[in-house]
Image (cartoon, rainbow, N blue to C red; front, side, top):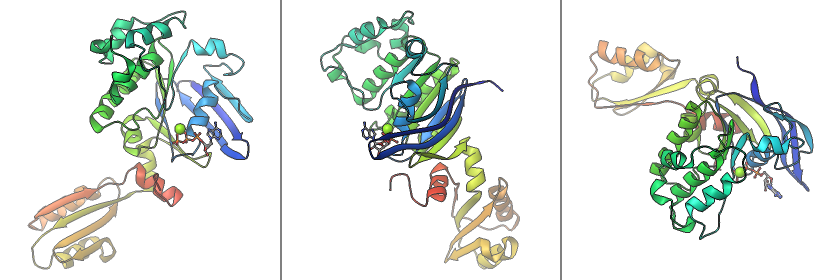
Length: 305
Ligand SMILES: Nc1ncnc2c1ncn2[C@@H]1O[C@H](COP(=O)(O)OP(=O)(O)OP(=O)(O)O)[C@@H](O)[C@H]1O
Ligand SMILES: [Mg+2]
């Protein structure tokens, strides 16, 4: 197993009386996309800022690429890239000017023309920042975070406020960063984003990590239930289903039948049963649990409640 590139142990950070991070411990491995997920105010940004060396923790130890983010800040800045939540630039700075300005901060940079091309910003080289769309602005911030070819990239709420199309474009861009061998740490409160993108996630609530792992593993562990809902005009379907699957697993409401079960094979078993018994089906859908359900199960509330 590759050595972790980030180690956080019992991190704590308060702003006056507000406890932003209570107790966060986690390790991020080289080459993975690691997500911090949790509701507004959970402590995601504060955790990231401590790891980046932009904030001084009250408690705990952090190493990033074997360095101390505060003591070795200058060395680390050359090796990590950061996109801040709600970042802004001057209204009338042009895209190429921002790229030039950022390039000057680093001893080594990538080919910036190539970078703008990869991020789909070539045609916007001469555009003012204020004339870019939300998605273009975010892509510019990603470009600025990647300009020095960093080993680790931090992306804080990268897709918040973007429409689904722009969001998908950013997702493929983040996957592309990983395919270049980089490590990505991102924060999001979009469970779909975490599920699609992240190799592993830490669920953060009230400044504590309450669960950590691969999204599919967390779903399998906490929400193994699966549901099939189908409609059929057939006679005695409910009785047949209850006989085969057990009466606790079947709820019938007129011609609509809801079947609940566990495990990978459940949906296949239902399909086989329907075929074997020649049940005529008018509608059929499966409802698989996701990270949102895991969050609800663990916290008792939804991520946006
Ligand atoms: N600079 C600050 N001064 C005072 N309190 C702060 C500051 N930054 C954050 N906080 C508080 O610390 C807590 C954690 O905030 P943080 O920004 O880390 O959460 P977050 O998980 O990133 O939330 P969001 O999803 O809204 O970005 C919140 O209660 C917030 O109000
Ligand atoms: Mg935040």
